[in-house]
Image (cartoon, rainbow, N blue to C red; front, side, top):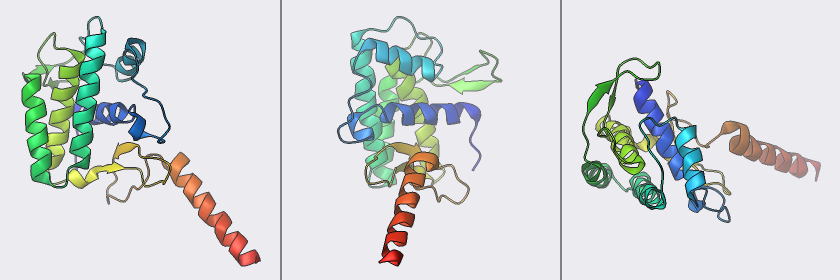
Length: 188
């Protein structure tokens, strides 16, 4: 499955946004989007362009978009996901346009010039997720299988075999625990 650079960036931003939620990580994890400075960090980390001054209203709107993306990840079927995405993208007032900014080749932005950061996320992220639904690849939207982690991720592996948000942390931790359990059992 070929995914363009801008679609990959939008998917990464959606995943990053979802993983700021308390339910995105450990159950006792705080909300990583709790104030405007944390929203600034999120915007900078994802290199969003055309973002003006961020306010408490932007924070509330982004958190609302985050909840809607979580519903898409949890959708039972493609039809439900499509209805959620249609609503999300329509509310953002999508305005597709070609652009080549910040050293990137031509790509499509789906948000209108001067759009809020929430509309930017809803439009670009919603369209990126819609491309997965259209391609019949919605099952690539996953949550980490580690028992103490519920981070979101998009499985872009060739054979759709990824199970953990990060194989170096969650995956490795579970493999080491299983190895130690086998060793204990063999020693007894």
